[in-house]
Length: 164
Image 1 (cartoon, rainbow, N blue to C red):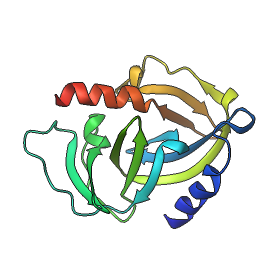
Image 2 (cartoon, one colour; image 1 turned 135 degrees about the vertical axis):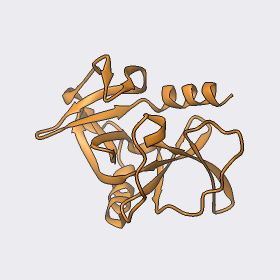
Image 3 (tube, one colour; image 1 turned 90 degrees about the horizontal axis):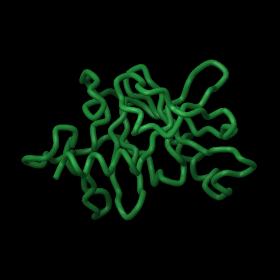
């Protein structure tokens, strides 16, 4: 986990799309691999005490206190209608900031920090693994796998509408 955070810190000092390359933090939910723009990721932490919030949307796991800030944590398995699993040593909370919001995504594991050519990203097909394509910015074609790039703005605006 620490090597991922260190790599993320090294990359953030560079331009976001240096030479038309996307810099991404990748994580796994079930058998799928997802990526988000590295500049949206504040940090990656091990799960900590999560306090449940009454009457919150079902995908809101609760809130955490991270250095004095109360941050909502979204269970990405629940959000994407995937079956629940026990947390293990690989489970992480990816703390992200976009717009003026800070939120944590509870994910099965964090994979790596990648730089991929923007030319390898294609528009999303209509439905991928049950997730509406409106939440997907594109699909990155890597040598041996596909990487689903999440559109954080759309994902969070939909979450706010459902929670409200």
